[in-house]
Image (cartoon, rainbow, N blue to C red; front, side):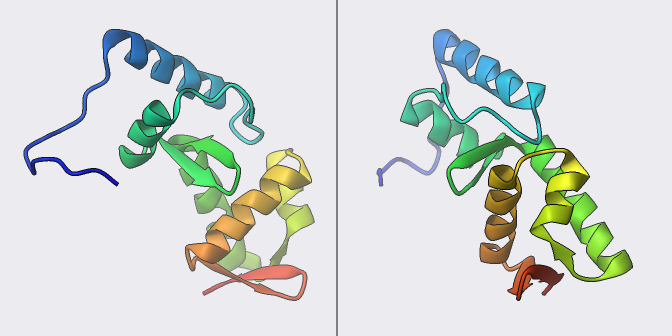
Length: 123
């Protein structure tokens, strides 16, 4: 919701970059159950999202590398064995239902998976 020249590229100040780096490290410390508290200011979050450093899945933010790992593992599992349940995803990553559900709902919204009953299948 802003207007800028096509040549404009946002840059964080040194302090903002320090905050952003600390937040991403915070997420990476617990990649499959990242803390939901302590998010930086909305401008920093938007910067990280638009640069695909973090990924939003509902009310959960994952470091992009953790997200890619999870999606890769889930899709490989789906190709190998077929439908997967929320409980299986939870156990696969040693996380809680909250994070597994946020991730699976995000994958449904992104049209990677489709919910069929209590399971997910590849689209």
